[in-house]
Image 1 (tube, rainbow, N blue to C red):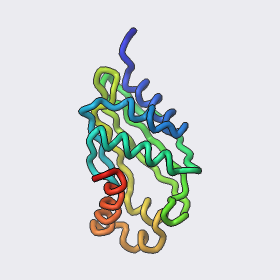
Image 2: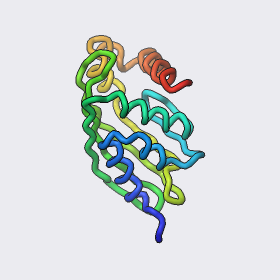
Image 3: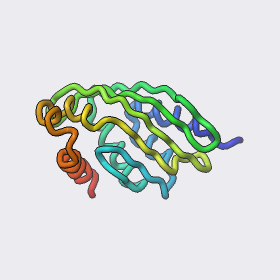
Length: 152
């Protein structure tokens, strides 16, 4: 049986995300994988798996949609949207993200999500996010709190 392509892996990952199956998402990462985004920064595979389980487990109203924009023999680029209520402020969020998944032997070895922290923070945090979401200070503060939730 041929190894899963990056497109197959991306579709499996985002279908699991939409189904809020953090365990299935985590199983798609190689043990030496890394993840990076504007909130959590760079994580190893173990902390990435914890992050996804916590995020999908806490989001009672999470809706995820995605489109695999491009894929080749090693990489898939995915435009995805997460709609949810940010639990700390009870504010609605629509986060537009571009994810790049680099794969090897049927698993993700590098996953980088890119989105506007300022756009996210003004939705999730309200006025503080609107006024300070563009600053490295607020991004570092939110990131430190997020990293603490996964044991970092």
